[in-house]
Image (cartoon, rainbow, N blue to C red; front, side):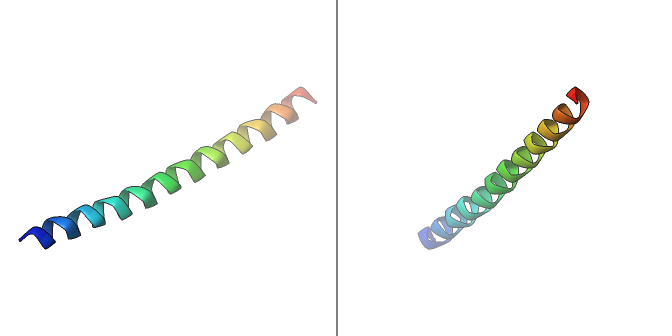
Length: 43
């Protein structure tokens, strides 16, 4: 029974890591777009 709990915990950890990396990637892309548009509007 305990191995099932460990497996579930591992699955949550991997899922959370993938979600976090995707979230960070999206934030990076948004920051780049904002920087590009900011530079374009200034010039």
